[in-house]
Structure formats: C-alpha cells, structure tokens
Length: 175
Ligand code: PRP
Image (cartoon, protein in one colour):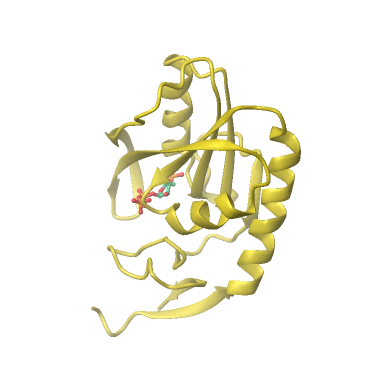
C-alpha cells in the first residue's frame, strides 16, 4: 500500500445510514405493488445495496450485474462491457439499478441501453453518490443519496486500485 496516500472523512456511518434509510422509504412508496427486480452493479454497490435491501419495506427480487469500463488513468475511454450477466429473466419487468456512484455517466448509459434493448419494462436508478460535475452523458438518476464534488471517493464499497472498499464510511483521497 502506498503510504503517501491520505484519506479524509467525507460521510460518516450515521450520515450514510440515515440517508440510505430515507432512500429506502422513498423507493418503497414508489414501488409499492410492483414486483420489481433490484439490480446491484458490481462491485462498488455491495455495501449500499446490502443496507438499501434492509431499508426497503416492499417485496422484490435481487440480482447482480458486473460491468467494466476501460479507463485511461481515471478517465473512462467509453468502452464498456458486461463481465457478469443477470441470472434472472427480466423481460417485461420493472428494474431498479443500484449504483455506488455516477460519474461521467458512461457506465450507466451503456447499462440502461442494454437492459432496455433486452426487454426491461421500466428502469429506475438509485445511486448513493452523484458527481454531476464530471458528467459526459446526460443520464437520469431517480434516487440520489448525496450530490458530491469532483473528488475521488473511497470506502463503503468504493475502491482505489482495489483498496479501501471495506471502510464503513466514505472518504476522499487527499494528496
Ligand atoms: C464505478 C461505479 C460505476 C462507474 C461510474 O465502477 O461503480 O459503475 O464507475 O463511472 P462512470 O459514470 O464514469 O461510468 P468501477 O468501474 O470503478 O468498478 P467497481 O464498481 O467494480 O469498483
């Protein structure tokens, strides 16, 4: 591990859990009576989806999709591919995609396009973090946990070179 890297607390456990519970209530109200499929986008969403699942007050089924976006440094090249596909038949079903962060929007735009073409009835998006400043594609986000500034976030599932996903809080990388 590079010992020169410092991290700074951005959102503590309580702030995250309070907001995730609020999102769970909002989503539950909107999805009442729908037999929907909750879709976690691997890997960054794992902590968020685990908490969101327990905050939802309506029934749903769960699946995951793995997506990889090739990056040059921190900038995505625009090339996206599915590395692990949904195991459920989602044709004519309502989907709720769960992301940890929407940054340029390239990954989500690709995912929305793919799932729509493959027959999803409707697709909503819940993201814990939204970094609007970096947007390259104008994608929709229906439920946003926190609007964040243009910094590099780690913890609560988010990584830097594979590290820091385990942290129970969100932090920013500092020089
Ligand atoms: C992150 C995040 C989103 C994507 C957002 O995934 O989980 O899927 O980047 O970036 P974008 O809006 O610029 O496309 P990452 O590629 O870091 O993979 P990971 O979730 O496995 O860490």
